Image 1 (cartoon, one colour):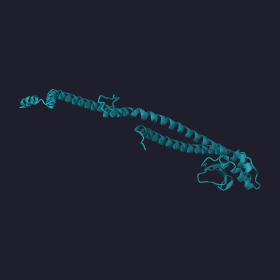
Image 2: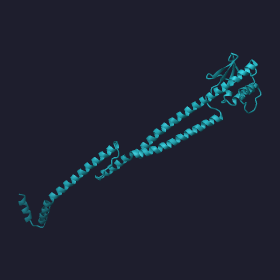
Image 3: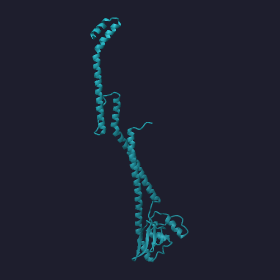
Image 4: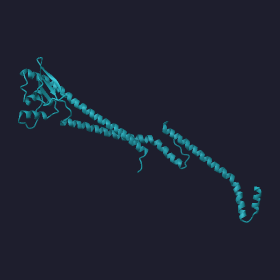
Length: 286
């Protein structure tokens, strides 16, 4: 199996680095958004709770106790400004309260819990969790009760989930666009940076085939340009060596041409039976 060229390897390396960076950034952004979004919802819920406190204080001052709210979720939700919601009405008071609360756990009003002065639950969300935010209800300078709100750990209603999905899709879309742009940029960088290297490789192939006049134009002042200059010096040295070899062979051929011609004449004469030229040649050699 043929291994990918250096251009493809560099392209894949750059693309992998960019993809890893984009993926890590997308995950970090999504997690940060989730934490920020949940924190925003909790802040809004606390603001909603603070707005309810004066109403509860006025209602307690008018009646002197919380008995008017016990087992009456419709009065409770009307007091804090929460619509009971739709659906079948349960038969028992406790079931009614649970059904109304469970119909919309994300709503700030539906996560509120009213406690009396002894911190005993009166009505509202059935659990007081460790991270609940609590506000004191003060009437005529004394503590009439406490209002608590359960913290929101994750979005569960349709609107929030849809908003989260839209944000995730937007993040994934931006990540995909970033990867496409990174792929194009990586391909362009790979081809641009390696173009001089490929030129030197092609020139080396021609030089190995005997084209000693091959030269490479250096571009810039980096290591690749230095490689091109070294290649040109090597090619020039090989060209000069080849020229010297040819000149030397030409000189040898010129020097041997006359003696060889005379020897050829004598040999031809001897082959014809005329030994006089050979005797003359022998005396000349003595």
